Length: 430
Image (cartoon, rainbow, N blue to C red; front, side, top):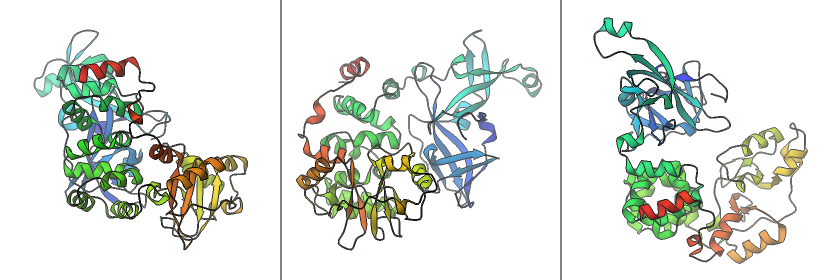
């Protein structure tokens, strides 16, 4: 649903079909999973509970939903088929929020929740509940229910849902830091007690926890991962950048590492094994295996559409890599790079194969960290391709990964720009 589209009432989502991009049905919606927030802020919609044709119920994150329209849900086609397990900080809309008795803030009347509406936030992939459809009057028989006045109010117009009222301490703390960048939230977690850190980590969704783990010191990463259920730990590793996940896996005992790899999607596990084959402080050990790869007959418009992905970091979106098929790493023959500034200067129909920057030699996977750093400094790069002897693109190294490995081990201890709220959390949670 694009920004500005009409809101969707959740009752209309019950049982609707879920399709992959090829048009094949993969299941049906059975519930919505939300996380309540403090200060009567609208709840975030984390994802959908989808029942597959095998009757197994799985969790579909909203980040994998590309559209909700015409009575159907369209996904990216990438589904994790592990059985859905509700977490303590999650609420099911159909199972827990509908038919609930809440109170109107203006009149202090008790009302019954009949429906809720969801809407996608402008220019973001986040969804939230924004409206509550309620019925006045006390519970009773069918005749009484039919006579009750019905109205739609803002989420903030009712009480009875809030985190504070339900006493969810970890979620309450987490909601306070909702706007923090992952690096800042990681700094907050680092200074919490081990018990509190585990509670907050458990309350984070997989993608957010993955982002935060990437910014934490190694000891904290291992501690948090070790306190998660193995299935969830595998999910979080899959959500991390492959190079960061491979570094973390490499620090685990061999038995734990193999067990987690066996729980991951085969393609993700293969990427991890490939990265762990390189020394940590080499281009191969630093690279991500998921750069933006395009064929030479792709257009500038295709390239711009790829770099607009809001999930990409600025460094990953700085350029695209043009290769012969296959486009998954390791690719076919690497042909060159197109920087985003060049994409902005050429007409949308221009083929990327005709505007290649192929002057710079790519990095070899065995290139040591000082060589990689020198390459970035000499050529003012923010990302660079890594190519093997056969000419295949293996991945790309970004400047943030280089800095991360060149700074002192305790550089994360410096609190650069945490606000006063984060400081209070450090004291309260310690």
